[in-house]
Image 1 (cartoon, rainbow, N blue to C red):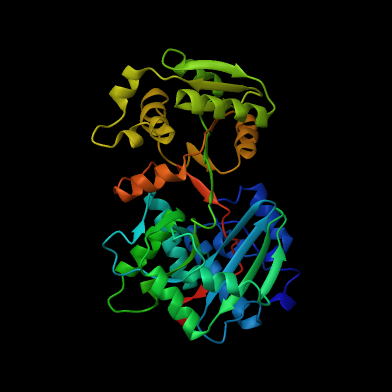
Image 2: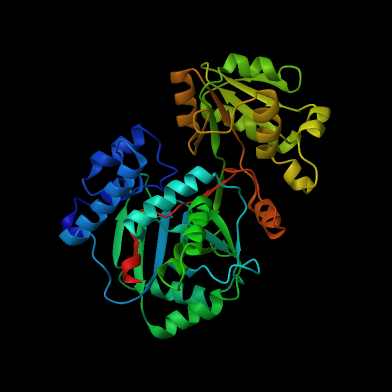
Length: 405
């Protein structure tokens, strides 16, 4: 509740996998003693202790009135606004069954150890702590759910805050039975693309499969955005190769990729990467030694030998496919585990950590949303952490306590 915390902005966090550790985690923990990061990324000696601590913290906050339940079931109209970026959608509990017929479209593979960690955390907290970001395509007009959203934003919001990244957030509670029925009728006809939250979606499904009877695990908390009205931003997720020095990385690709030193600073180097991606296809920007190195124009023979057959050409030519199948697995021989590969949403953070610890940052160019959706509709998953859709919902404004249904 706003009166129990320093400010709403101070208790929010980016999604758990976007928090840059350890610096970003420490910053959030010190922003306010009730920052949501203490639930989504609890700190303790063991995984079991972390999850138990999060559950105890959540229950204490509820007892103290820091978190208060709504008095009646609701959907929430949620708005994010920053400069030219405006996003509006609906936060609510999405039924997980029936799971057939392609209602929800995943587009990325997941890592089992992360699903196990998130599942243990959800069991101990008995809550959905973060809304996943889902994209659907409406008809482009202000009818159905869109009409309800557009009318609601002209009323007094339930809460409003501006986070330190400059985004203004507003939230409205939607409880009118006619509005809820109108939203349900509209959205029941749509497919939803998982824009952000593949591991948490896999966690929802796992926990649901463990239940012997119908109950609260039949639903999962999501934010649904009509991208016909509010297109999402698509950004890349960069790799940090902890144990591969940049000198070794460059030497290993010298015979199979064109390698070019490009000028900084980072924004200028990223422009060079974008130009190479538009004109020549596959390209990556490597950093870690204080400079920037563009690698592109891979040897076609190498690609033919290392990229698996039986997938659409759109998948075979993805930068993430080339990175994982060709570079990481065959050229650099980097094991696919957290000790060797980190995933960072911010290019500057990847570069800084590579330079500080002697590793290699692999900076990537984003994939277009149309490519992601087309592959998902074909049932083809992309390599994990291939895309970053946004803006992502702030964590901490809406939680779902499963004890309340």
